[in-house]
Image (tube, rainbow, N blue to C red; front, side):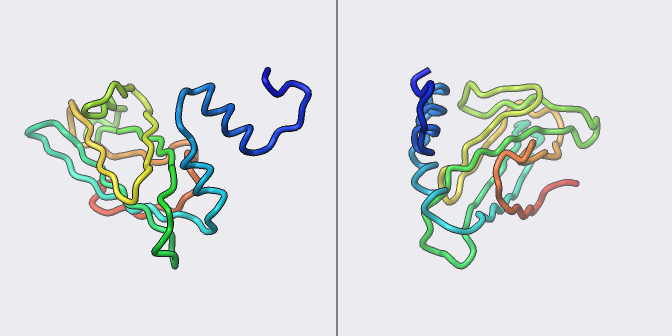
Length: 144
């Protein structure tokens, strides 16, 4: 209701979203509005059956702009069992983030590693579900 009946700026809108979800979106404003180009996300993965852990490594770049500021990129992820072809529990290590379907990770650095635990079988990742971010993606070492 803070802007009922008034015109708002993009910054007002972003602040309202941040306040409603109790998240800091300052990096979003600083990067998405001030840098041109589409981020490229390189993804590699590894499954360890002994520890039942799955590691996704994501690296972001901005083609032809080596000195870019890292974007705040929401990455909606689900895991599908390679053998069972059923959704797997998605539990991020050292986090409360857990779902039987999809979790949204935030890639806020040039490179970030996400480790999932209690992954009962080798998964196939379902990345950027529902077009969670306007990016280009390349994948390496990911089962199809």
